Length: 186
Image (tube, rainbow, N blue to C red; front, side, top):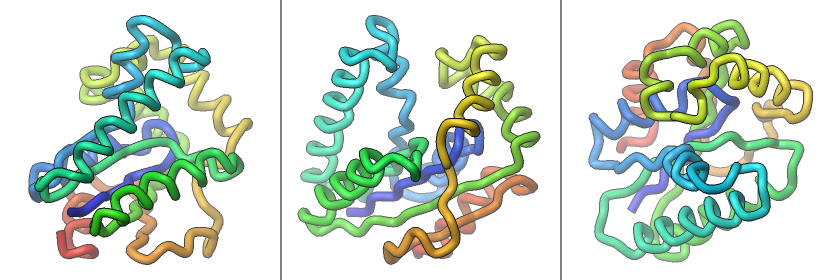
């Protein structure tokens, strides 16, 4: 069993890279908006109820996948490095899978803000993430998050084994997926 965690700021390409990685491996993709947008039909993610339901659905999926005979799963999300809660969530997730014999791989993506603003409007992103279809709101949220949180690590901050940081500003998603597959022999 393999757990590949792809993280980075909004619109950096996590889902798209995950889609490409799933195509060239036997890994299943679970991008964070699969639960955010499901729950968003009832409760905003920022509410107590919304967060509880998103976390509940994710936990149940992680539990079942970690016990299954699947090859593995790719999970994507935005990691706020200035929030201990996010560090705890990563530790809990990797711990769940590793307690059942899985190996965790950590993939950090980074890209320029201009590139991310362009990607924020991509057809693929809007197709798979209904909550991002309000472009003005989504762009403002992307910019606000830069002021509020640190969404890429500081060099040397992540000390987990099986970690790679990729600047994908000028790379296509399929190129990044091939790099990840080769790096971790997936």
